[in-house]
Amino acid sequence: MIPPELDLFAAIFGVFATIFIYSFLWKENPLSRAVEHLFIGLAAVFTLAFMYDAALTQGVWGTARLYEGNLIWAIPILISLMYFFFFSKKYFYLYRYPVSIVAGIMAGMMITGMIQSNFLVQIQSTAQLPLVGAGVWEGWPPPGLDSIIIIIGIITALSFFFFTWEHTGILGVSTKIGRYFLMATFGAAYGGTVMARMSLFIGRLRFLYETSYSDWFWAWYLVPIAVLCVVGVALWQRSKPQAED
Amino acid sequence: MDWKTITQIDRRYLYIILFIFVSIPLLSPLNLPILVGEHAQAMYDTTETLSAGDIVVCSFDFGPATIPENRPQAKGFLFQARELGLRVVATAFWASGGPLGEDILRDVYGSDFPAIPEYGTDVVYLGYIPGNEVGMQTFGDDTWTAKGTDHYGTPMADIPLMQDTRAAEDLSLWCEITSGTPGEQQVIQFVQGRHGGPAALPLVVGSTAVSVPGMMPFYAAGQIVGILNGLSGAGEYESLLAGAYGYPTELLAPLDAQSVAHVIVILFIIAGNISYVLTRSSGGKEK
Image 1 (cartoon, each protein chain N blue to C red):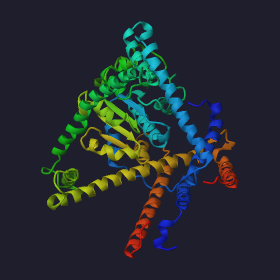
Image 2 (image 1 turned 45 degrees about the horizontal axis):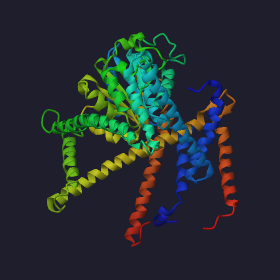
Image 3 (image 1 turned 180 degrees about the vertical axis):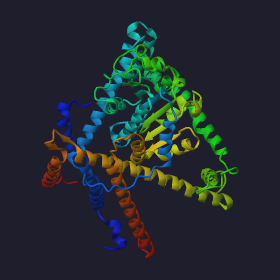
Image 4 (image 1 turned 90 degrees about the vertical axis):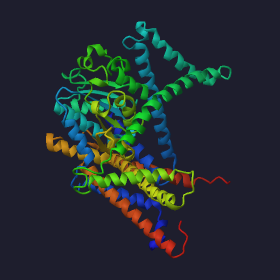
């Protein structure tokens, strides 16, 4: 939450950062790189600070934690401190303990969780697709048609990844159909990506057009100035003598 | 310039065209109709079936990069939950979601949040819970262990709502506002799957549009019962809330802009393909 007195500063900074970042689409330049680095640096520092605070709250200061004498919370803290042996040549092997513990925990959790939710339930759901019964072939599109398309899609797409026999004959036809299903899936994913990127672009434009402060300042006042900064830097770069290869 | 050379247009002209055509509806909305899709309707309907006093989780698992999509989704859900009298346990499994979630709660419950009368009884904010998947699983198994205090340092034992929230079995609905991992799949694997499945803990998701195609198998299997698909899903949900509760709409102009942007992109794709086909049919080498 930004304090009200910093709203103006945030708006000014936001306008310049937005224009500088988008200037990358025209041409990579020092301003776009500077804001890009700033963003990455801020994100890294923010995450580090927030996680450090959360870890202390969770493991040390919280109710029934280390500060209140619950020594079991010292174990994860000590294990996590072993990560720092990464920087020691002599004791590097100790760094492997926290890595292996985390990998082991995640593997154990993932195996059971994923097999159940991403594998068994999906197979069960596919096996229960309706093909006959009341209402299955009523309306448009009928649910039964959906079921048939899904079944064909699953079988043919799976056959595409079947490499024991050469993809000729019936298997060749199946893999070709499967390839179209896969392409349709990738197309849907691409469409979603375009939609998401457009949403973010619209979000930035809304920030530029709608942000104001105390009825006398609107963010878009600064857009021409920011654009001029980008143009000025581009001209300055062009005027510099080019280094020979 | 003819159809065959159209692919050689400098891409920067396309950016300028896109910028102009997206700006027009933002500055002067076209008021195109919003058609509510199946997934947003399902999310709305699922939430409507709950009774006053039911406990729901709203998890803010996104970062600043997807605020335009995720923020209106979260805001809409919290608004509906408040109107229905649901008790909300808000939290975040992303570090960046912590402050963003608090900001959204202030939008819905008032700028004095958490200094509001209903804090602790009808709504509580736990803030960021570290540990990603492990944190999520612990939250579902034993909520008090996952986070000893709320976001403001109040011990769980001193919060009336948390007296009734000990594990996933106490929850009636999980609303996952997400743009990555941990997200809806981790809720399915580590919370829903361990605590009775979709029947016991229905899951609704507000997601960035990139991730939605990957969620469809989970929706078809009933593991997810409602989805808000990016900005358009948030707009559909908003229109439902506006009709039922007079929710103030904010997304009419952005949705107009998105529709225009999609038309422009489709036209670009058609033009590019025509050029490609003509170049090949005349024996030229496509670039």
